[in-house]
Image 1 (spheres, rainbow, N blue to C red):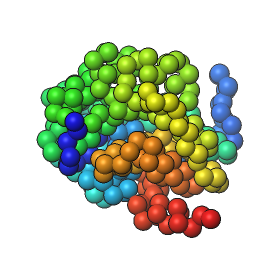
Image 2: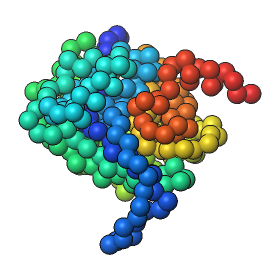
Image 3: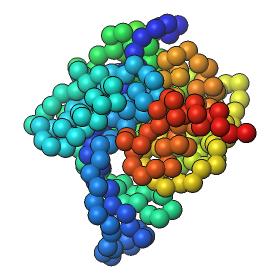
Length: 289
């Protein structure tokens, strides 16, 4: 049985996103001119934590940042969103950086330099008071595996966004409820339930998401929106999903809310600063016929 009350703990990366708009992605060996560079807080873990907090969750973030200006930017964004940053360690390595090229259709290409994220340790993980722990794979795999195994021992629900895809132990897969991947990651993994997970969610962008359990697959459609920038949409989805699960919602109902949050997140440029609040999500849902 899972714990009946508590905090959402997010274990993951924290980066400074260096975002530039380009007319098209460069081919190999080609130089393409872009717009002005924007520096915004990012990282799959920090994005998930901010999205969860803005969705109304009580959130603690476990991560590592450098003792530099980029680290200040990341911590300020987390704090402003209401995230507990007592679990963030500042290290000698530079804060992680993501180099993001955004094309006019809102799609993006990303290169991540992990930096301080690589210094996160299993010993940094604290699950006291947690109901749900959610982790992603821009931090060392042993940290993620430790967090999930510790969650299993404590009766805490474990959610992993397996992005980027990595090999986890069978014991870790067996505790995931759910495993979250996008459609491209799912295609490479094959039959998700065969990995041994308790449940899985496959995000499909404008098509919504599929909820996969032993009872079958349920498709949750996404509302139609004008896409501006898809950066961090998957993290917004995971954060909102985890909050709803922490609130005791069923997996399908949690995915319904997460799809709305992710859809709203792509209507504005950037990630953390534009994630919808709980009030905005509710207004959007009530305004549709």
